[in-house]
Amino acid sequence: MNRRQRNKIIPSEWVIVCQLDKQSATYNRYELWAFDWKRGARMSWEGWTTREELLAFHVPIRRKIGGKATITIPVAKLAKRAQWLNVNEQQYEQLQPVLYQSVTYRQWQQWKQTLDKASSYC
Image (cartoon, rainbow, N blue to C red; front, side, top):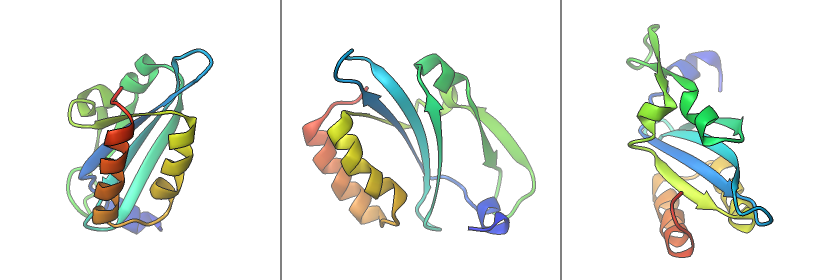
């Protein structure tokens, strides 16, 4: 995806993935995903080890398609409408292909239904 295409992304769905560590029973990794289903695009940010670090991060957002003006929104504000997924290591391995490969909105909804039955939200 080139820079011009990236400028057109307006996320319609936000997902925060919390990976649970089996040994310490704490969350050791957080990822933020933004999906734009109309354009088939996705963006991700990762590398947080605490919830406070994640919520303090500011995400750059376009005001309109193709617009030059960007604003930054703290994740704490996005967290209200984001889906928080609590996954263990095995579920995270199943989630990776879904996140990194191109999937349709229908495939994503089906995968979420199977995850809802198997895990809880963090």
